[in-house]
Amino acid sequence: MQLDVAIDLINKAKTSLALYRESGFAGAQTTAKELCEDMNVESQLKQKRIRSTKRHFAYEAADEPVGDALKNLEISFFNVVVDSALGSLEDRFHSLNEVQEKFGVLLKFNNIEKISHESLKSQCAKVETTLSCNGESDINGLELAQEIQNLPSVPLQTTALEMLPLIHVKQLEELYPNPWIALRVAVTLPVTVASAERSFSKLKLIKTYLRSTMSQERLSGLAVISINRELGKHLNYDDVIDDFASRKWRRVKV
Image 1 (cartoon, one colour):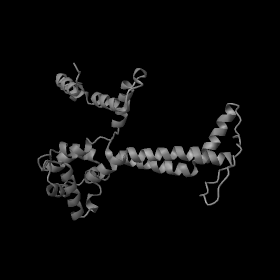
Image 2 (cartoon, helix red, strand yellow):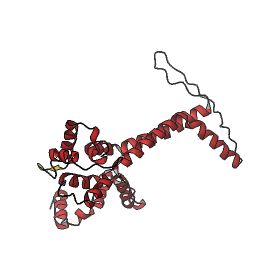
Image 3 (spheres, helix red, strand yellow):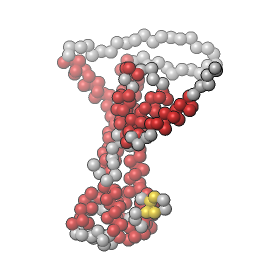
Image 4 (tube, rainbow, N blue to C red):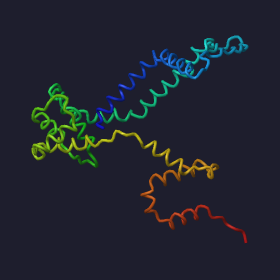
């Protein structure tokens, strides 16, 4: 999936969840009542008696307890679940917005004519900085801005994934080398955020019921070794054992 399409879908999901938080409880309540009728279950929530507690003078007053069972369900459960989903979307995909800011000039070409020359140069310079390593860059920002402006006219809503084969079919790679390189990087940017899921899957394999008493330090070390097993294959175990033995040796009195 393209990066800009993924971000657009995520933003729509956030908007939908925010609207659902404001007006979705009534619809959820109606659906729950219909399910209760189908299963012959009572659809009325039991009203719990609110326990009264003594309050001392000059102490901060606690929040007033909610007496209505439905209102309490909306506040303590429904809003909490929706807020958790919104927070997860924001945390997990926050880095995608940063990537979009760096490669935004390459994701869509239908707005190139609306961008000023100075703004285009600054965005291309940002792409050059992003694709730099040890003082060397794969592209030239100024040349990238000039070549983008000189690109042949393209249809509206043309994305980077559509622009790349267009340059290849018309054999314009040598004429526009900087967009050719930058576009190949832009269309291969990963959208997934599965690195955390990978860590949890490894954790399930390591911390089994037989290792339930494992300490946190040892668990973290085994998880790092398992995740980076390709690097672990090149370790010299004799050196590791000697280093461990030199730190754990004890003098024995004779």
